Length: 117
Image: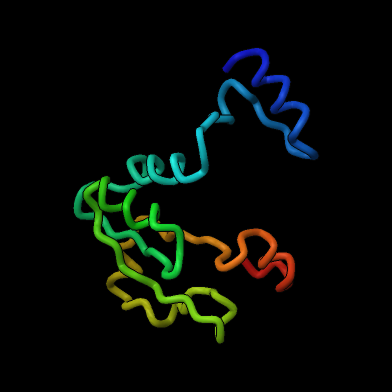
């Protein structure tokens, strides 16, 4: 990482100590990182738990890694949280990743609803 990036990381992280050489990855956007993270956690044939609605990159990254998506419907009646009891037990045991987001309004939603995500 360049010295300019190191300076920005040190200036913008409040209360969090990060090593810019080993703990920060500059990306062109969060979706790029999410999409590539699938390759780190998933192998062909693995199962990922994917929320719906959500960013399309959760399912697309899973597909690019050769894994299968098990869709977890999110409902307003449940505060947009996954209904974990609705996931079949064999799928839950086999899943390597559960992609989570704070749909529908990113981090603002979480703060308005008591930080439940």
